[in-house]
Length: 399
Image (cartoon, rainbow, N blue to C red):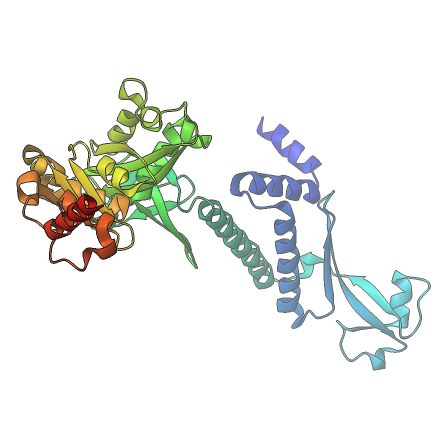
């Protein structure tokens, strides 16, 4: 069997072997064959330069169909040997006529250079040029591939802990999950598959440096985009998101189709869709609320599951005062203020929450504080609201 294999290999010429090798590299490394051809041409020119001292007049051509290559020097024809100052640049008329019959003094002729004439060092240098180009192209391909996935979610395999950081294999490249991008309490085992958000892809001399995150709010958003078909087709939009990684997230969703319930689509039948995301996030709680253009309604939705008595929002100042039943105050604020904090991030409003009892004596938390606007014409003439009301009643009686 070994003899047959050798016989078959002898039947192949160097061009065929070269093409097969390039096909394999193109498939495995995703480097275009044309780029590889150019690398070989440059390597041969480099070999000539190392062998002859310069290569200004050296040309290399590779037949893309057969894989055969031709290396030649462009030489000027001179009449006698005494006129030849540089063998690489000039050739006598006598020698030139052996290559081409119709040639005269002053003409330029292509003289083939046999690559076998190159020394061992020149050949090794040529090989290094090719390998260097392949490495550069491979890094470039990988960089472009993952740069396109920047700000997206990918699945990776945990490799090992590097200090407090984690190395994650994404397929053709390794990513780094820094300590500050890890969720507190999450512990991973080698070979475990996890989803990460690609924060940044940098191109470095050693190859692409990929930074990923498990704490980024966009991770939750991208997971919903993957899981919910209505978000993929644009029927439902995620308008805002607030997250405290590992603990709780709030997302506000809006439906462009009145027949589609945005919250229901994200929750899924029996909670199937949201539960799969919760599982991926290792039990992180997710509140899904309806987006509303009215800031008061949006803030009320954002503070769920707490019940709200009243919301007084100031769109100009981006502040809101919220009144809740006495027994709902702790729920509205949340453990260590988390619910109120996430609601504020979700809506973009600074939210001040008080119970009904607290609101009775707090300015800005009573309905009458806002009813005065109806009487602003002429109200400044009176010291208080009761005096203004009395004057209005007197005027009515006189009429």
